[in-house]
Amino acid sequence: MPVSSALFKQLEADVWARLASRGFVLQVRELNGPFGSHYTEYRRSSAAIRIVADNKEDWLLLEFSQNHPDNSEAWEDLSLQRAVSSSRKQYKAAFEAILEALELKLA
Image (cartoon, rainbow, N blue to C red):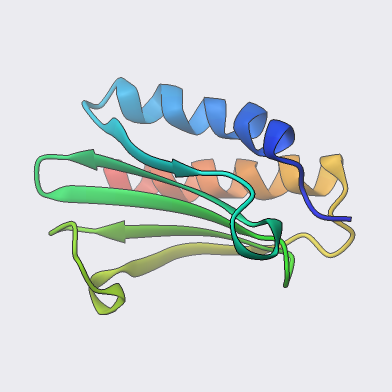
């Protein structure tokens, strides 16, 4: 069962709160993209952070770029979490791991 757009937005709200307090702004939010996947991208001057929920493969990915790129090679993977059963509990745990990785990167 893939993560719904409502659950993604709910869990992502904690990430957004932490990024907004550091001057990041929401640049892109795509819900129900290919295979029902979702992603958001935040930017602050030259830095960018992207969160991707890949519903085809059940991955949750946090990426960072120092120079918000136009190509994928400039993105650095900070956290890759697998949510095998796509349960609410597993996605919450995956978002918690992403928050930890985000805090480490922004510290």
